Image 1 (spheres, rainbow, N blue to C red):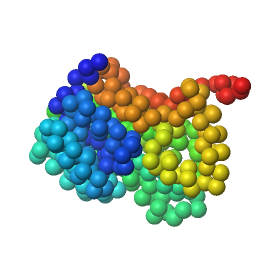
Image 2 (image 1 turned 45 degrees about the vertical axis):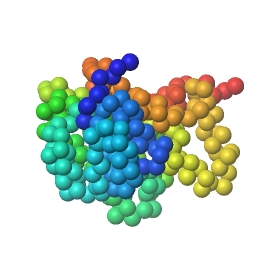
Image 3 (image 1 turned 90 degrees about the vertical axis):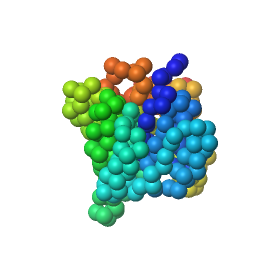
Length: 263
């Protein structure tokens, strides 16, 4: 299916993670569709990824940015405007499940909100004139934690709950401009960060087996590529009448009947 993303300028925050992370996979998928990924992140891996894209003839750029600092986000948006003059899609992807709970400091809680939610607001605010110019759309990457809770991660849960609220608020605000706003809900996806986390547990193999067994469809984790594929479809013109939606890509983990788990 031709998603008609060729030469579309797509800004992806948090896309300079390790190979196989969700943001990096989205950026690679965009490049494979002929789109122009604009990576906004603080990690220097972004330079390497963009160099790879440029060697393929893709006019991609990396803007090194601390996404917890809205002044840096504003500067990033100005660079995008000077370079491209438009944004066909904005994918707010950055997210850190940082484990800031009720025992955490207020400073840590506020930082969690800044990186996991305020960055979404700032990036959208400063890119909005360019999104309006292109009649583009916005896609926010969310988490099932905002819907189900997880325990021990108040900052992340609050931020991702806010992201869902912003998604629908923007869908209402921007409908008069023909701009769509949606969110992807992720549950259990095998990423480098997930691999690192599971290995910190004493009973890592047992815990992983327990999680996978609770995923109804095929009893396996969602791959980052499956998430990327859904993202690309959602920002494309093939999804032109979808707005204000929370699209769950999780093999039925969150919503399907628990009776499916009984053998």
